Image 1: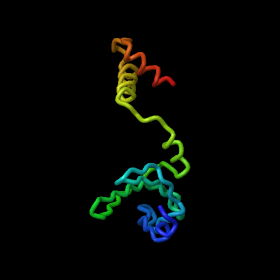
Image 2 (image 1 turned 30 degrees about the vertical axis):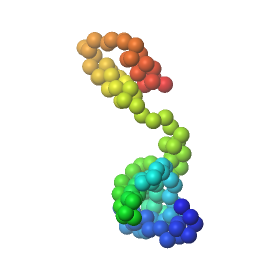
Image 3 (image 1 turned 180 degrees about the vertical axis):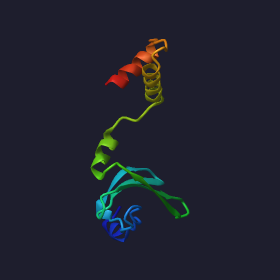
Image 4 (image 1 turned 45 degrees about the horizontal axis):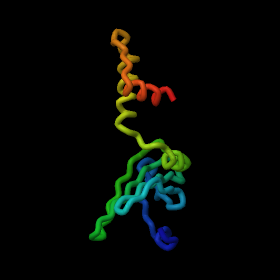
Length: 121
């Protein structure tokens, strides 16, 4: 985003205190051809919003904000983290099932062993 565009940007208002969100308090999390994801902290109340900006080939821009506990400083960790895979989700499911049901039979297949190692690390 060019410096001129940044000065003209309107990110909306904070959903908590209704103060205007400032571009200087935003950090890009991810950007693709049509979607940009920003984390914006409110200068007034310190709440955070994940802001998705969608643009179409026709020039239509739509935004969607979600109140979050992620802070601007966390975005670098998010960017450098590994993507969550279906194996990760299944490993968590297995872990919860095996630890919440004491009568369940614990089993260890090659796939489950890999999943369980991911959960323990």
